Amino acid sequence: MKLCRFGEGRLGVVEGTTVRDVTPALDILPSHRYPLPTCDLLVAQLGPLCERVRTLAGRAPALPLAGLRLLSPVANPGKIIGAPLNYQKHLEEVRGDPQLHHDNQIAAIHRGGLFLKATSALVGAGEGVVLARPDRRNDHEVELAVVIGRRVRGVPRDEALGCVAGYCIGLDMTVRGPEERCLRKSPDTYAVLGPWLVTADELPDPGNLELSLAVNGDVRQRSSTRHMVLGVPELIEFASAFCTLHPGDVIMTGTPEGVGPIEPGDTLLASVEGIGTMEVAVRAA
Image 1 (spheres, rainbow, N blue to C red):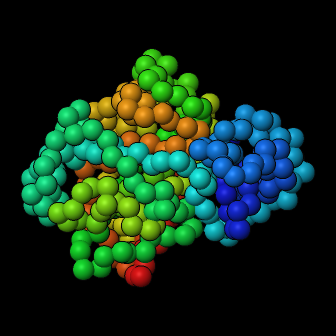
Image 2: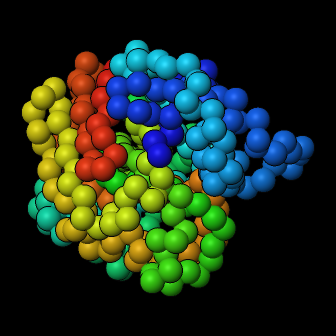
């Protein structure tokens, strides 16, 4: 199933070029008083929600997908975890270009570990990217994004895929410079997630997916998740060894070689096999 959020927080199920408005399915989600749970409620209740969506979809209003403003399919992730330099060719690319490394320490992911992006950076494909530091180089990075489906800690890799709710396309936008990675990757709009959530049953093998990114029609990144240094199970094992993962937490799995600068007015077209394609506009602040 492909679930999207659109407009003013409405819920849709994607069927080809059509979206069925199944917003009433959200009525099954539990209500909470303060303090709120440390998870995304929709993802935490994904199983019952999908059952309700199937019941409603046949008679739900049909809307053209092309006319919708798509939001992030996950509204409230507790954390967004990044996997730096998780493709060998991208590691070599960064080490060889001073405009990318800025004399920062560059270590392979096994040694350098993971990082966090601010959840305030999260947007959907229809919201676009607003360049935070036009005086600096700002780069695109296309990635497979993994959405955690249940609370886990210390999960071994051979059980890790059972913890996944679904997958999205992720854009890990980056300001180049000398500061810590987590700061340069956390401006508002610098975590683009979309165009929808594909439930895990539709992508049983996340380790063999083609992905690409084009800027104004010019393909800059093209690779496959089979070239990741740490695959999805290993990344979940790595992350959960340090912290508890909650429903709705997002792991950006790293970007392949070919990262490059973007400018106001650019249009990014990001694709991941089995998920689809999302178009993202870039604009000035």
